[in-house]
Amino acid sequence: MFIPAVIRIVFIVVLLMSSVLTTTASAEIKFAILPRLSATEIHNMFTPLKEYLSQETGEKVTLVITKDFDDFTRVVKADEVDLAFSNPLIYVQIKKKVDIKPLALSLEPIAGSKYRGLIIARRDSNINTIQDLKGKKLVFVDETSLGGYILQMLLLHNAGMDIHKDFTTLPFAKKHDKVAYAVLVKHADAGGIRDGDFEKLKYPVDITQLKIVAYTDYAPNWPVYATPRLNTDTAKKIKESLLKLTPTSPLSKKILESAKLEGFTTVKDEDFNVLRKAAKIVGAY
Figure 1 (cartoon, one colour):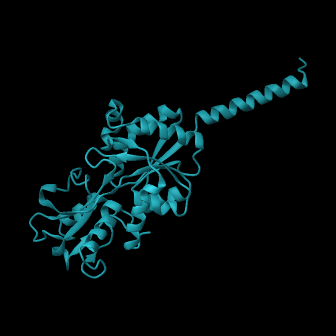
Figure 2 (cartoon, rainbow, N blue to C red; figure 1 turned 90 degrees about the vertical axis):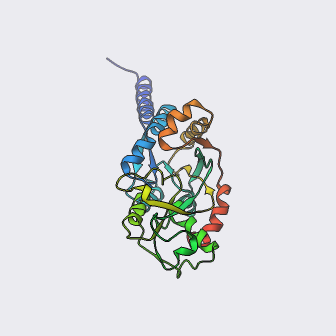
Figure 3 (cartoon, rainbow, N blue to C red; figure 1 turned 135 degrees about the horizontal axis):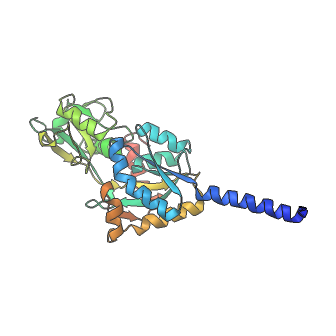
């Protein structure tokens, strides 16, 4: 049967448009989560949020849980993911190199839009104050861990200690639970972890054998941010979806309870300027 050229062209265009729309609808949003805990814990904590964002955007959202902080930074800088959720220090470090855009700031049940770090020691040790840390072996999470290193360094610096000479800093443990375990088995005299993660520690870490020596000051909480590869319209949808999860919304508890979050609030890059200044003190920015 003869088909006029015009009709054939229209038919081809319709097929192409259908293909594009199908591809768009099935697009995958890769959501990287900074691995401050084990991969299993992170997966369980953020699966409800992943599913919620999939429903809200109409696109598949996949969690990307990297092996450590360095690998997380690498995949974000390499534009291998679309969304990321990390501590604010890593955010400002990446922002220096990549045009990432903050979408929302996470809220925690107690701390709200801010959080802090802890210094822990064995309960049976003679370490009770910051000054007792002089001459001791300390272990931390990672050089980019705000709640597990940077805030503790600022605390010690502000207490008059020389952070390069007054104690020994052991190789980074890479995970908060590994810091606690190193203290528990006496590989380290004390360690720095994030407040809130202390209560989450599980076997083989027995927190009844540990004590909190000091608390750091608060810092801005973790932001969710978009990488350059995420298109503007989708980023807007995700931002709107996150901001629906307010502390008073029943939906927030369903979506965020497993992640130990209460909701999200608005954020802008300028909110992290104080952190940038503080990080310079310890050479982290």
